[in-house]
Length: 275
Image 1: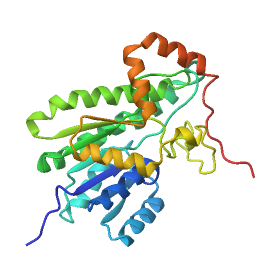
Image 2: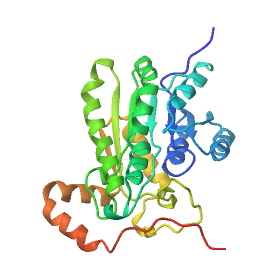
Image 3: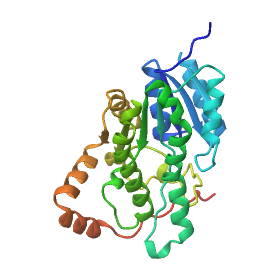
Image 4: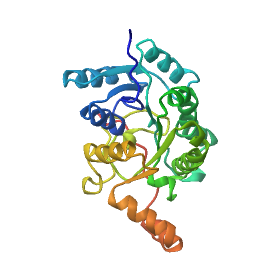
């Protein structure tokens, strides 16, 4: 007789680095199996090998959340091993930066295709798994899903949209016994600020956020995973994220004024290091 792995299997998109990789390490540390999904298969395989060498169970799967059917294919691959994910984390995403008047419709469309429709694809193509396991769908949002800053309208639009989606899912999924958790991080050590407006990764680009303001990936992952396993509706990560969300809710005019004053132009796109 074969045994089906259900409640302790986690599927993570955008798992090749940053928060996605941090989540994978934390779930494995807690004795759970992870299925890693991203476009960069070489990095995924390296991470999977690292996790297996530490005694964990991990598999790597090439997949792009902007391509219809990629997540369904991964789910089918797992099913051949009698693995049904009980937690699905829609983590894949990047940030388009720049003043709205300097960006094209293609820039906005590219942002929404990955960050918003990528979440929707992940949801629709993994929902049958979550029905079977009565599991949990996790949406990677952002503090930018609560407040929009100058020079970041595409990213904020995408994160406002997935926050609205997560809010609706609480009621929509209730009859199915499926839960939903929204993760709203502030500044965390990750590669998102090393990705340009076209989704290109620049590993040597300098992170514009100072180290003292960024939470370590490992610490952020522990907080996120604890919230997911406790079934929380939203997990806000970092003190400054909690502060900004509080101010935006209760003092919107003052917050907007301070953000405009603090902004000294759009955050520049990451560029390759000169050689």
